[in-house]
Amino acid sequence: YGLVVKGKGPIPREGDKVFIGGVEVGYITSGTFSPTLNTAIAQAYIRPQQAFPGFYYDVILRRGVKVRARLVDFPFIKS
Image (cartoon, rainbow, N blue to C red; front, top):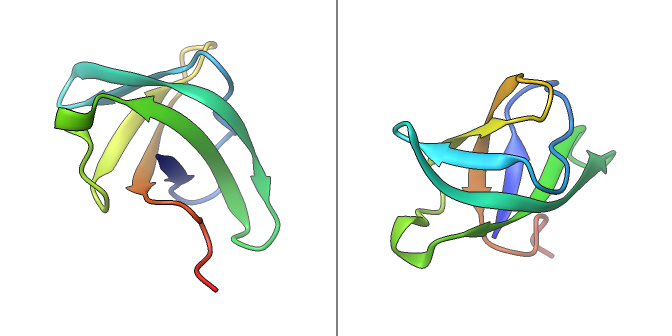
């Protein structure tokens, strides 16, 4: 799945944890800044039974910062 960070938050990186409702449901596999979307994006492994496209998840970065991100299907930008 893909995650699109809400606002101008920091970039999630490999190994950062993904939570919904305080429960860990996955982790980030890669992240970067998208100049097209003008925000940070990431790829994540999310347990299928807890993957709800369109819902917002919390991503806890290694330095303890929490960002909100919306779960999306690939591709990030529809053609």
